[in-house]
Length: 204
Image 1: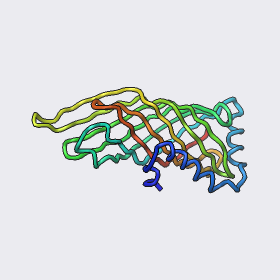
Image 2: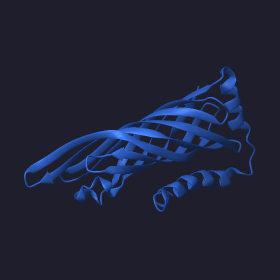
Image 3: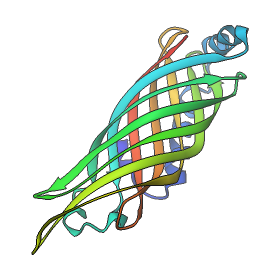
């Protein structure tokens, strides 16, 4: 499934994740997901936190020739947020996209993302969600040259968006599957990093 998510247009991949979850559980009820949202919103908002990890794919706009065929990193994300209604909320995330490397040539990226979240329950234990916001990223790269290894750093803002699905083991604990795309600035060019992650979320 991961390989298919990383082919074609990014927005189509994001929609495909949500659609797959929706089709697989459409025939069920929506008791647990709705009950979780309603119970947690008793104080006017429903906070949550989570961690996830998976695959990060750097596109080729970073212009490091030796890394054109080695674009996959291992990423980690820690996040927290709150739903202000049963369907709308905000989320703040720290992301480490990992490192891609070939010999002495390498690129590494991290960032902080703030996104609006829209969520809809589907089935007894599922919901689907979409996100759109911005990522402030910082990057490091090293490129070998006849003069030696050239090191550079950069940072900046970029658009982020994505979609995913959650499966509830209990009203508090859910597993997540998510696709996101982040605009990240390298010294050589503005780039994009696409991620596919799985993780756990806890609803307070």
